[in-house]
Length: 598
Image (cartoon, helix red, strand yellow):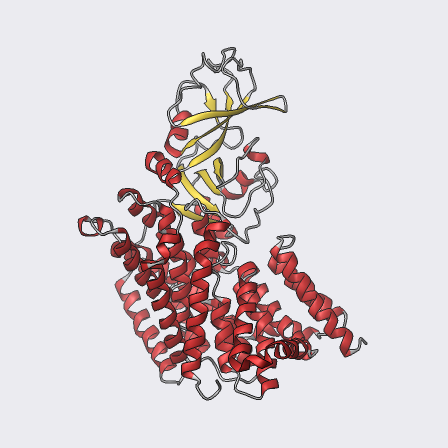
């Protein structure tokens, strides 16, 4: 049996290594948490019951239920259609100035994000916000970061707005601490939204990049992609030079390189002759690439990626997600065509020149894929949850009025019971979910598609990680170190230090991971100081959602990263002042709500 000292060293070292491995993307977060927790079990730091205790945690179960209920609401109540009607482009809205639109969009999106998961909101709103910018000569890069930031801040208005508060609430319940107060969240979250929206709308918008080149390419025909083509056997281009074949004067498209017998020819000279079996790599905008493949030049997509003979083919644009299993792998390795019933026609990656065959390109988070999709693509995309679809026509079913009325009566009654303290949030959500199943508003297939096992594993094992920190006294050790460094700054200095550490963590790992690591420290610090811990728990909750500095800190940032043509520097430039104002607002509001502690 290891001594307490060595247990503390192992726990702290493991957390540090976990942070580094996740930040460097050497391991997926879910796998990293699992390996660390298994190590603790093998070394006797945790027992199996403690490792698996998260599966019985009400807050984690509440998160899963919220995801499923959100999916059923989108399916039966046309949430996307309602949002689209609110933001529908019309004559009245078309004359709004950039800053008027920015302010209105951020306020409304923040409100929606307080009770609807922010990821689908951003995925839905990205094409709309881009189109508004295109019609009003405003670069999408001046709009999309504010869209993401507004959903992050709005999610902190309520306990159900983000997984951060739900996970933290689960920790608090496990340690016999009172749940987060809804009024505290509303007051602090309201102040955060107010200051954040005003900062961006009246000052911060100047720090947003104005990617005019990106805007011009969008205005012509959307994004510039890299596309791979091959010559048909009867292509008239064989034997002709690039100039003779007319490939030097294509509209919106240019020949980047030729791959011949495994060798790459780049740059391509006008006098270069085109040979049989050549692979031609073009770069160009969306519509012109599609036109390039539908001409008499005898160009086609490589087999078996050609889906043009299927009964129903759509052109779809999708973003590779931050925790996608596609990251670091090539389309050939994952058998993309078979897996998704879709062919990658082209790839767009901001700030990087891609080279070689599309099937051999290692995909990265934030990559934009132009796809020829078959009839089963949507179902398979929902199943694997590796891609965010940002442009695709959607069809909605007309809901059954009797079914909707019955559901609303039960749902509103259950919510009222939570408000008046008769039910817990978990019981209320369970009742709503049960009535949805009874009314056939959600199917077993929907449940399978919506449940994200990676997210659940992170939630469960991060809870076990927190228990290891507290059980071994590692939290007390680190807390004492923080107290020693900040003791002369008073309680507000200690809280400020916790907020800064949490913000740094959440900028490079998930917000759930940041809460999991910081809760035991906040718990230990409050105990060592002998004061109420609620101000510290509220502080780390808000700091864990302060994912403004990097695009990888939050899923919504990654969704807008590619379409906005952003770089890491763009997020740092606007994100740093937003983060500073955000944290100062949180500190001020906590001090106002808990004056006796400070």
